[in-house]
Image (cartoon, rainbow, N blue to C red; front, side, top):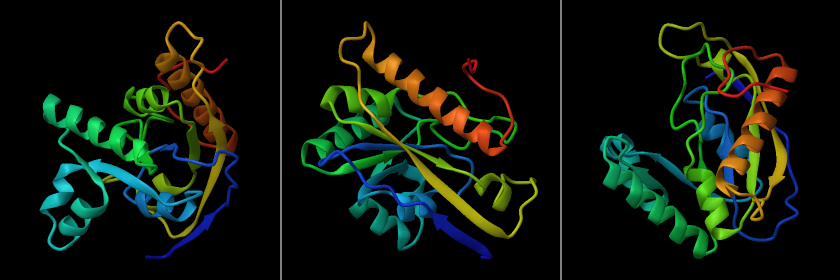
Length: 195
């Protein structure tokens, strides 16, 4: 496809399951996350992928489908992810809940990934994916050939002493990811002010 992946490897300090969270800017994010993840992880993805011939079968066997149109479907997906963590597997969740419009630097986060980390007292491994929105942009946006870099920003542990550990972890991860993308050269709207 003319994309040259350059995943920067990261050595985990934590020996056990984690929640991997990355920015979501393109359909290329999934293979890049797969290449750059510090260890194998189960992906949480939209249930529409189940309808794809052959791929849908493998997706159902190896990933956690989410019916985003249904509250019950979203809740079931979170229960499935919680069970995978308890079984010792790491889980990948894109906290923006989908690909936000190109005008966003980072879209608003949904709480699911961070609640999963808090409930199981595991770290969020936060990852930046840099060029994907320029390589394979949204429909109608410019695309280009070239490299795609990734970087794991670290392991972000829940602060269980906080009044609201889920919100605190979510905000901390959002700001770290947004600052890193901005330092790299990305621009756009933010859900939280950078201070």
